[in-house]
Amino acid sequence: MNQVISWTKEDGVATLTIDHPPVNSISEGVVTGLNQAIDELSADRDVRVVIVTGSGDHYFVAGGHIKDFPKWIGKGVESGKERAHWIQAPFNKLASLAKPTIAAINGVALGGGCELALCCDMRIAEEHAILGLPEIKLGLFPGAGGTQRLPRLIGDGKAKELIFTGKTLSAAEAEIIGLVNEVVPKGNSLEKAKALAFEIANHSFPSITRIKKAMQEGLETTLEEGLQIEASYFSEVFQTNDVKIGVEAFLLKKKPTFQHH
Image (cartoon, rainbow, N blue to C red; front, side, top):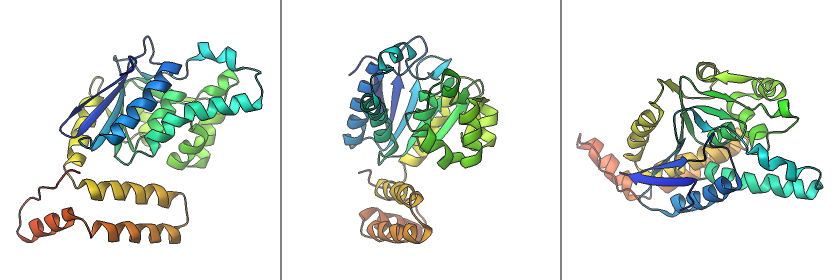
């Protein structure tokens, strides 16, 4: 396993940790490690929910590794596009992972760190966390999905305000605008994310993965087309063994025990 990225699993829940001191910035090693780890998590049949967090208690992921940036400058448009696609690749993999994902934001999540959190389905932030896309302050540009995922999550006007000004938000401010799901005391994000993950992991895996697909695919289309997508996945779920288990348990007033593949 890549030394800056590691993951562990427990009862269907995997925890992926970014450990790149001092601030968990997104270096070439982090990008490479994320690509590899997300492929492994996708393929691992025991993993049903994925948590993403940073090591330590101050930084989730502080942002891009800016020391690398000078060698990207002035190399031509095609070279710049290659760089963007290179950094977007693991982020897109995480965003399109069939399994539910939770960001446990244990500290600063700026720029690429905020963009990484945006790739997750849910975000739990510790009260001291700071979030935002401050790239404009360096004459830069959010190039790992920020200009696309932030407006889809919090709305166009608020996203433009944050990206155009580079303003950063406290965890409490981020919760108000829907950027994070919940704020917890310092040191508690992983514990809270795990509680949520175990709750999700106990539900039907064939159903939850189809629910995620229906929501993601439907968001990119019209309501009418989205309802067609919903109907298609709904019909698939009714062909699974889990739906038999769930309905029978309900009728017998028992708790269902789902298969987890």
